[in-house]
Length: 154
Image 1 (cartoon, rainbow, N blue to C red):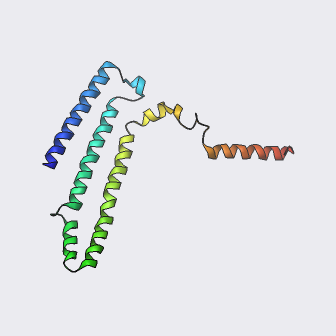
Image 2 (image 1 turned 30 degrees about the horizontal axis):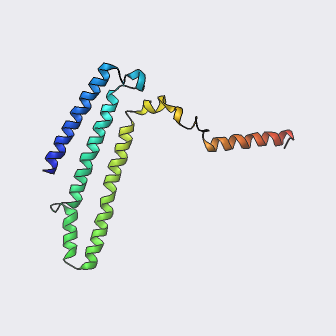
Image 3 (image 1 turned 45 degrees about the horizontal axis):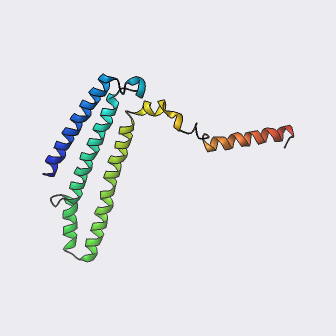
């Protein structure tokens, strides 16, 4: 039932993304001139989000489902005593942390990729507006001081 609901929600979401993309593309409300990139890139970012969701659910099912090896290894360790149960549980727990982190990191990178030109187009709220890169400012100040010392002014 969980997977049927997940697949149904994914299909509805992707269909909604596609319809919304077509509407926004045809009306010109979010045209390439406004966004700096094709509207279809927003659709692909949404699809990447759906794929991340499905992968996270699959990873969770693998590490918590009784039919898969992580749970079976903890069950086998429980037969020999409390300490081995704790050790096996910690080991599986530590192993279970890495795959979702990897999927989310790759998904964030993949989701940002379609909107890359949007970031470059609307850069006025970045470092240039707020005083720039602090390291660069320090270098400029130290260069200025060095020039003053070289001239004998300071």
